Length: 103
Image 1 (tube, rainbow, N blue to C red):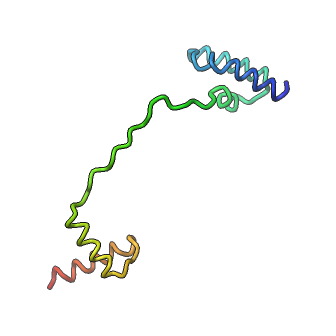
Image 2 (cartoon, rainbow, N blue to C red):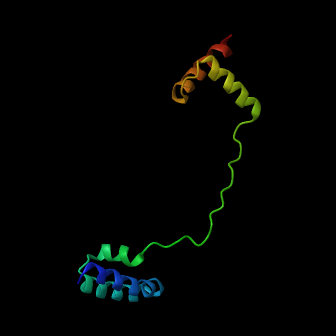
Image 3 (cartoon, rainbow, N blue to C red):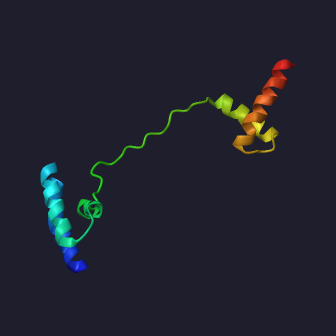
């Protein structure tokens, strides 16, 4: 069977495959594997096809975790630390907090 014929057969069977029950899908898959020579997993991917998302996902903004006062204080500390990255800023802040709480 040529590649074009395989694609045509898959296009014909795809809609029936989507609407079939589990047992019917197995039978359609077996027949398609015999006709096309595809392995079973590849045949599942070919018959499954690309399905478009029917529902549009809703994107909701995240709730603010910290208030504006905290964000401003953090920005001041970040500037005092000469704009270091967040991985280095966290230990720096904890050492500074220990220093200021002791004083």
